[in-house]
Image 1 (cartoon, one colour):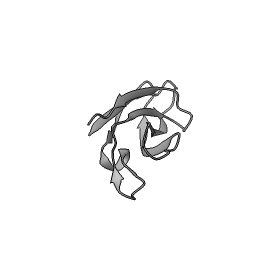
Image 2 (cartoon, helix red, strand yellow):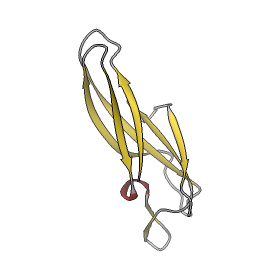
Image 3 (cartoon, helix red, strand yellow):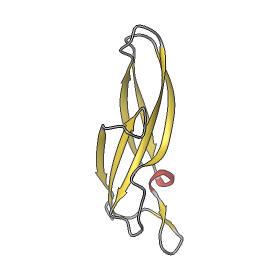
Image 4 (tube, one colour):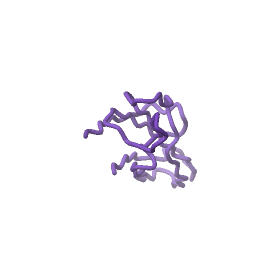
Length: 99
């Protein structure tokens, strides 16, 4: 399991709520994968000026896919993770699964 964490800060003058979303892309899998797949989301309420770290655990359910034999697998490939307020999030991190 890997944990991807982002820090969310309320820069406004009022309390607010953000839905933080985690998207994953698997590059190099034996079966074509989506460009971005929503793998988690969390609602976070922040007071003015407050910051919180928001973690997303990425394990077998979030990283696996069904191969050509219809078996759920994780293959040794490269992954990109985006965390933000929408599917257009730009902040990304990369990691590689090795055999």
